[in-house]
Image 1: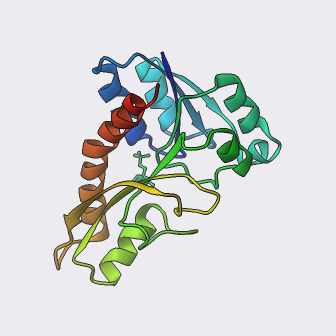
Image 2: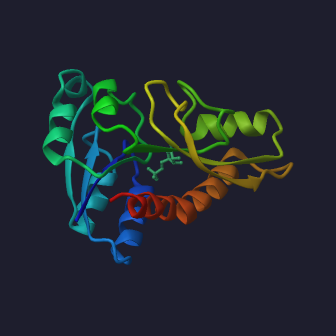
Length: 189
Ligand code: GRF
């Protein structure tokens, strides 16, 4: 049994997509969702899917609550899927190479503090980039700087709006993120 923790701050469409995908593989998984926002839509998705979920706020992260929970759960993989807080460094040390994040751009471009969600796609369009994409990477103590596991690209057309770019990027996320996770889980003993 693989213990998978999915962390999301908002909608959680990636978290749902990953859970749906993994349920249809032969990997036996136990899922748990953690969000830092009490009104995050990911909580509705968890309810609908019958997956356990809990809220751990930024303040509680700082008080060590998230770390305590991780030590109890002892996850095989922690997946940050739209989780907007800086991940506590003690947990990174507790679970080396077991924490991954998805970033909606081709890192090292458009990464770092403040570069999340639509801000990323707005910057890509404003800079007239001809391509963008996704980056799945290990989590390190700095935003968006851990070792890259996987990238995929999509073209940005001249008249694309940030919303259109976001949609293309989401499609890439839905297609590849679950597969990368299966690959990582299969590598483990
Ligand atoms: C995704 O685009 C992800 O890359 C990011 O935030 C977004 C989350 O979307 N960093 P959702 O909550 O999975 O719908």
